[in-house]
Amino acid sequence: MKHLKSIFSLILFCLILSACKSSNKTIVEDDMINTWVEEDDNMPKNIILMIGDGMGLTQISAGMYRLGNQTNLEKFPVVGLQKTHAGDELITDSAASATAIATGQKTYNGAIGVDMDTLPLYTFLEEAEDNELATGLVATSTIVHATPASFISHNPYRRNYEEIAADFLKTEVDLFIGGGKKYFDNREDEQNLLEQFGDDYQISHFVEAELEDIIIDPDKNFGYLTSNKDPLPVSQGRDYLLTAAKKSVDHLAKRSDKGFFLMIEGSQIDWGGHANDMEYIISEFIEFNTVIGEIFEFAKEDGETLVVVTADHETGGFAIQTESTMDTLVGSFTTGKHSGTMVPLFAYGPGSEHFAGIYENTEIYHKMRQAIGWSENKDNEK
Ligand SMILES: [Zn+2]
Image: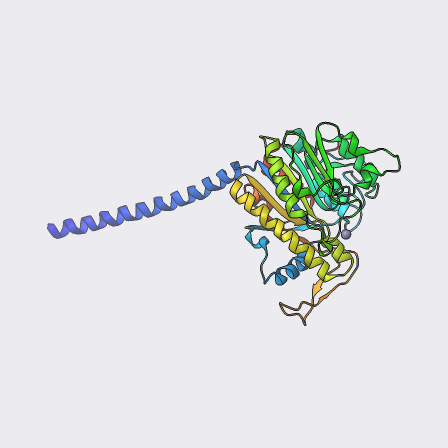
C-alpha cells in the first residue's frame, strides 16, 4: 500500500511537472507576444535621422579600420539595406534620394521636395511641424544643399540655392545649422533674408560668433550659418558638427513637449568620394562616427528617441584593395560619380524594429511615420 502510494505520488509529481512545463511554455510565448505588442506601442517621441552623404559600406569599413576596427554603428541593434535608385535614373543623386527619404516618393535627379512632375510634396519635416514637433536641420555642406534642402524646400532644381534659401522663411523650422551664408545675405535679388527672419528667430553666423560660444534662446527658433559658401573639410579645420549636434538636441528638446525631428548630415563623405580621395572620406567619416556616438548616448539616456543612420547613396565605387592591411589601407575607385550599390541603415530606440530588412529608400519615410504613429497618408502632394 505504501509502495503504491509512492508510485501514485511519483505519477502525480510527473503530471504536475509536465503541466508546469507546458504552462511555462505558454507564458514564455505570451511574453514574446506581449513584448512585441508593447514595443509596437512604445512609440518614439523624437526621431533623429543621420545621413552620411555617399556613405556606402566601404566608406564605413575604411573609417572602421582606421579607428582600430571599430565604429559606433556597431552599437545599433537593427540593420537594414536600402535601394537608392531615382525615379528617372538607376544612379541617384543626393536630391532625388533625400526627397525619397523626406517624402516617400521617388523623383528625378535634381528634384528638391518635388515629384516627377515638379509638384511640391509634403515632407516629413513639414508634417512634424504640423504635428507640433520641433524640427531641425544640420549639415556640413551649405544648409541649402540637396540633402537638407529636400526636407524643407520645394524646387525643381537643386542648384537654385537662393530660391531654396528663401523657402526657409516659409517654415517654422526650429533650428538650422550649416554653411551658405551668401545665399541668404549676398543675393542677386539684393534681399537680406537674414534680416527677414524676424523676432521669432535668433540668427547668427561665423563672422559674428563661434557656434560653441552662442547661448541659444529656448524661446526662439535658431539659425546659424557656418561659412559663406561650402564649409571646409574636417582636414582643413572644420569642427562644428559635434557642437552643432549637441546644441541641436538640447535646443529642440526644449522647444516642444511633443518631441522633435532632427536631420543631421555628414555631407562631405560624398565629396571625398567624388575626389577619389580615401583620406578625405576617412576623416569625414570619423567625424560623423563621433557624432553618431554622441547621438546614440543621448538616445540611450533619453529612451524616447529613435535614431536612424543611413546614406543617400554610395559615391566613388570605392573599394579596399587586396594589398591593404588594417593600418595601411589601399583604396581604389571605379568612378568620380555615385554608384548604384545598396546602402546600409542602422536603427536604435523605440520603433527601430521597423527598419530591419531590404527596402526602397522611400520606405524610410513610411517607416518613420509608422514608428511615430502618424496615420497612413494616401497622398502627400502638397
Ligand atoms: Zn555626390
